[in-house]
Amino acid sequence: MFEGFVYVRACLYPEGVVLPAGDAAVSVWDRGFVFGDGVYEVVRAYGGRWFRMREHLRRLRRSLEETRIGFDEVDVVEKAAGALQRVQELEEADGLLYVQITRGAAPRSHAFPDPPAEPTVLVALTAVPDFSEEVEKGVAVVTREDFRWHRCDIKTIALQGNVLALQEAKEAGAKECLFVRDGAATEGSHSNFFGVKDGVLRTHPADRRILAGITRECVLELAREAGVSAEEAAIGREELAGLEEAFLTATSFEVVPVVQMDGRPIGDGKPGPVTRRLQEAFRECVRRETGGA
Amino acid sequence: MFEGFVYVRACLYPEGVVLPAGDAAVSVWDRGFVFGDGVYEVVRAYGGRWFRMREHLRRLRRSLEETRIGFDEVDVVEKAAGALQRVQELEEADGLLYVQITRGAAPRSHAFPDPPAEPTVLVALTAVPDFSEEVEKGVAVVTREDFRWHRCDIKTIALQGNVLALQEAKEAGAKECLFVRDGAATEGSHSNFFGVKDGVLRTHPADRRILAGITRECVLELAREAGVSAEEAAIGREELAGLEEAFLTATSFEVVPVVQMDGRPIGDGKPGPVTRRLQEAFRECVRRETGGA
Image 1 (cartoon, rainbow over the protein chains, first blue to last red):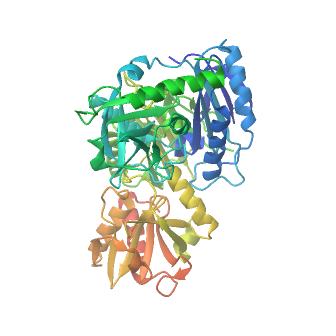
Image 2 (tube, rainbow over the protein chains, first blue to last red):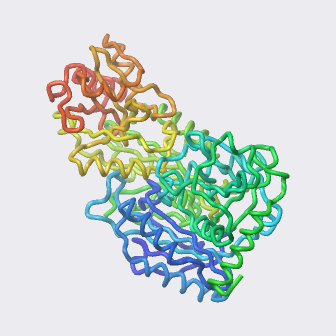
């Protein structure tokens, strides 16, 4: 069921090991398992080269600081990533790196373990799912009230709310759920959200209501370079139906047009010109920075 | 580091096993570990007999339904509990049973695994920590804005918000954090909250903002039996400083007086008469229902 290899450093493997994904285990008392007490990152490789690894590691460090998980060996992640590329013969392949750090294993008690436990490190490298249809044709989304916690800027593994929301969206025939909080669109369950209104590209400011996506940031840079007016300004619920274009961004699927929302078409129901321009600019940026794609 | 035994049924042990707590492991791809995608219960035994096990199992079933985890073998939990009592020779002892069910192990993807994975079951039985000082003298709490998700009625394992809040409270010299949402006190990070105002006992209604605690419900019943006026009505933030008494309830520590809030005494800074009466009534109820304590 589980393909490939993973790197794990945990109380069962204190030195860190690379082993088949199906064999890798953590203690039932890992705080990741009993409290969702950890953080994560996903990094994409193009032709074996990591896209904006430095930015991902910076965000990982921030998540660790905000959750006060004492782990400062972020270089372990890069070494594990390289080891997984070698053992899986993916040195020149596309791939998605999954990195998770938890507060470690300790007898279950809500407060931090004292003395601290050794953080648990999980790194996995898997193939990139085929998102070409979504990228080309666009997807449907459904909106729902954002019922998650109020620190969505932290890339926590405590994602049960995201899981439930995405599942409901899927069952409603959509590919993503778009959260709305206090009357404004925030983000998707595992993506950032952009809309075009009166020719201006808008996305929610990177405050505590959304994750500051690496692809989101890149798209904002590219929009400015391309002369597209772009603002970090929330899109009100009442503005959603009138958007000219909309798209989602994520490390895994890059830039995916939103062509339908709550059963109604966005614009003319096809990916719009700003979206297409930014998809192309993003691919060009990836080529420039990694030589791959 | 880990004492005693646990029962685990997971992809590594599909038939279910009782094994030393330090050896028990789950797949790194368990959705409990990567998404906090599970629910739990804590049940207390007095003299080896479970207090209100039926109510705990009913709540567990509700949490499973609300999170749509397809697990209907709740009898497995009772059997595992008995097995753990025997193997640890705790058939006549006090103890805390920890029960956790997750959506099982599957390749990481937010939506539910399709076909569904076999849910992971973890059951552990540990000694009851000594809460006698807290019960006798009372504790300090600090308030903070409730920044958790909006389904606090589900006993989710995705508890990173609770963990961070309790840790901050602890570092502020308090034993618990009291959450306040939209101007009203909701509950603690791992307890329910009661206050006495103008002689009336009040606690937040059991809606989506709090967990419907088993001890909370029991205390409400006992208050009515004892002729104490009790209301399920939220206590406003501005009313907190003027409370005559306050206390916390939880399965683990029962009824613990709150004698200080945000550095200021509650009432005269000592456990009050309503609190004492309900502590005694609770112990009497436990004796009546279990023959223990």
